[in-house]
Amino acid sequence: MNNQNPQQPLLGLRTAIILLLGLLTAVGAGILTVLAGAAVASGILTGGAAFAAAVLFFHTIIA
Image (cartoon, rainbow, N blue to C red; front, side, top):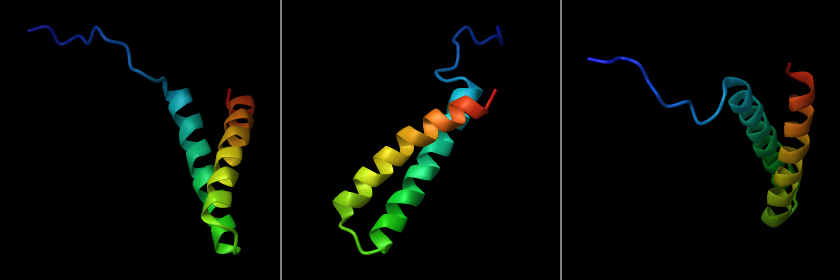
C-alpha cells in the first residue's frame, strides 16, 4: 500500500496560524464592542476591520 499523500495541504502552517490569530482578534473586538453597548451590526463591522488589521500585523511579525 502506498502511504504517501500526493495532495498538498490547503493552507500552510504559517497561513493557518495568521488567519487563526486574526479570527480570534476579530471575535474579541466584536464581542467587546457589543458589550460596550453598541449595536450588533457595529460589532460585526468592528470585527471585520480588526480581522484585516490583525492579519496584516501578524503577517508582518511572523517570519
